[in-house]
Amino acid sequence: MPEKIMVVPRKQLLKKDFQGFLPHEGNEHVLEAIKKHAFFRGRDEVEEDTSLKQIIPYVVFIHGTKVFLLRRLGKSGEKRLHNLYSIGIGGHVNEGDDGVEEILNAAMRREFLEEVSYSGRFDPKPLGFINDDSNDVGKVHFGVCYVLNGNSRITVKETDMLEGKLAPVDDLKKYNLESWSSIAAEHVLRAIASKRI
Image (cartoon, helix red, strand yellow):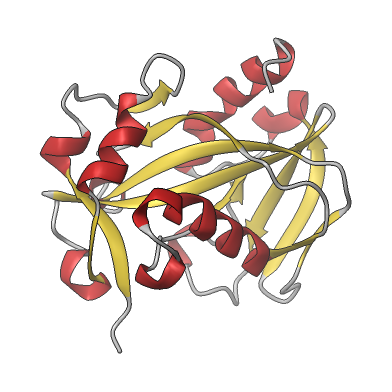
């Protein structure tokens, strides 16, 4: 069976168009729009359809004042992200993840635990939304960014494809971050500094 993933029509999702990062606080209607207008389509049907946005839950793991950094090595499937660092763990929402109301949480947990070993508290809080139409990949994806304040050890599962480590938040600018991570980084830093998460 072809993979079916969650999409939302761009016009329903981006009533007020934005590029970059939109905080969740004050913009809760975006999450409501996803729940209300989401449906599923074959992944191959939507990869180039800019009228639809593929919804990607994107979890940033923090532990105190450190952020978990993930780097995809040469053997990993997504060539566009090779050797770039990411502060977010996420992926597509699949049709079988759950009913629409709970689907983001189910997909977020599934994608997170596919990438890493972690047995601690799992209660991510929404931080904001990521939209970047500056490239072909970004034109068809939309990030729902969450922050998970971890309380247990975290390691990558597939060490031949991924490398992971906790790094001080103040060091993030030293790393070659992929675009969504660059967009989200300053908002994560601000949230940590203000102790909002």
